Length: 347
Image (cartoon, rainbow, N blue to C red; front, side, top):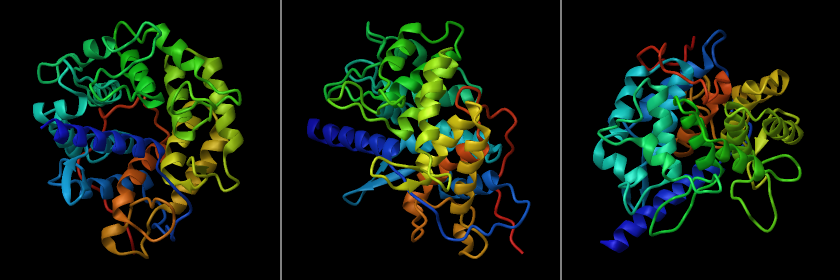
């Protein structure tokens, strides 16, 4: 049983790191019909990929495991696009089911994962729910209990502490929405991880501080929400400095991609860098699968502009939607979202 839990935990961690680091470049023709809502079409495609209309899964050694993190990315994407609200409802209902929830955030006793707890709390808030009562679990209290004296949010787990810049940023963003607000110590800790070039690393306290696009995009939004404009501005300057000539942003391997570009574009828009955001958005539009492709693929945002792969396009599309709309995590809301999964309008 322990070996099975360990394998499942390691798989979840692998998926989380992959979600933070994945990505790629300009895709096949995105010849969408003029006037089509790009984000809405992308969200419609994403909604149709959900298993049983409620969840995403990851297959490992021929076995399908629940992918709560990717499912929550879809919840955020539907809210940003303002469509597929019925899918967002079912997706969050699935993630907050006790067995699914505890497999993601931990049991709250020996196992409690900071990043997952924060991300789920934020998704509940985005959908207008109460994160202090998620099936009887107070995610906010649990999250505050995972803050160390230094201000860093850490995992409580037999498998070690895998918290990173995403964990810290999501924690700050979720807690900032509460009456008590985010702890100043948490923002100070995150600001203190900044690299000499102004960007933020995925993992703190490494021998060489290496700025990461995805981590910086999240950190910028968290620091803005926490009232640390100078620390956020440094990250924004770094993002602008590494933006490609075609508007793209690259992963740690140097490959331009939809995932990193989507997150960076979101930060640029919320950080009042309209020209850089417009260039990043144009790159994302160029990756969107258009009317020349198979009907089942239309509206998706391709991962790297190569051969279209639905397996990577789900995460790429979810994160690209955030860049297409530019809606930040700090104020994201599903309140005005409509139901249904729009399709790309083609002649």
